[in-house]
Amino acid sequence: MALSREHRLRGRFVFDRIYQKGRRIHGQWMVLRTMAAKPELLKTDPRDHTPLSCRLGVVVSSKVSKRSVERNRLRRLLHGHLSQLIANQGEGIWLLISLKPGSADTEEQLLLGECSELLAKAGLRP
Image (tube, rainbow, N blue to C red; front, side, top):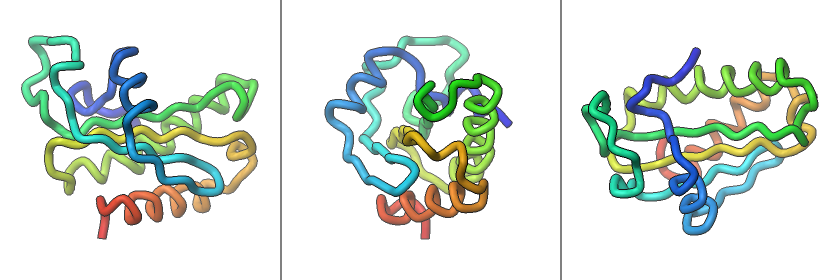
């Protein structure tokens, strides 16, 4: 399941800023980066109705798996899990999840559980 357009993080400057200035929370299989939304970094798109909405991104590098099919499966898994968060989350925050090498061999439930734990540590989920 893919994220809707208004909830996707896009653009090199956005990702660079989150990597540089975002708060990092490390887990065994992933790293969660959070940052207050900066709409001025976004490219203006007339189809985006809510520039301050909660935006998410998932990074799965080739170090996680050489097979693009596997990387896309992990990305879709996390997108589906995070899309439930969007309904409950307020505006003004950007989230970026980066998977660590070796996470492709982990069970799906462990990955989703760690994702929920990291979100709780960041104060985003009860």
